[in-house]
Length: 211
Image (tube, rainbow, N blue to C red):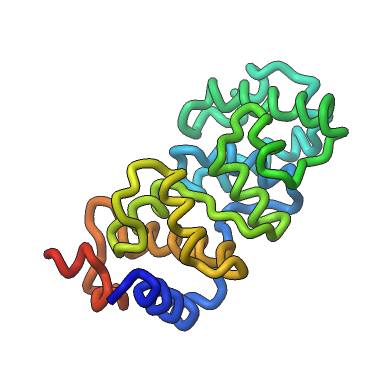
């Protein structure tokens, strides 16, 4: 089976088993999702969703967040990973949004990456989820699952993984495929103990075939 056929089988499986796949982060607008995704780095979505209600109640707009010191933000996010750095990133992000973008979250991936705390993965998430742009965000789940199944070959960086996935997934499915791979990695193809016995992709999975 060549890679094109592999992608077709994987797409067919997920379209049947996971026709609806969305972010598990809670948000109501682009600003709220941007805050949540910055917080989600090396932190679970469940934990982020516990943090954001009070944080966003206190700082409902970029303008309100831009006015405070990071020490105040730290008090709201202390239970997440790397709260010191994330507090600084959030305040810096808000100040740049206000000063450089009129308080509006940009929809361009390059513009998004200018914001403190926003790398390519975060920028792709915002562009894809909020603005419905054909972008493939690569987190640890996507990176791992893609390599295990065999969707990516020899990829050593998230950017290499992104380029290979974008090449083979149809553009109109990129947003959905991003969530397919994340959710599959989160609940089935887990890092330490993949639940292969519950997976419907074992017939085409490179990792399983090598067991």
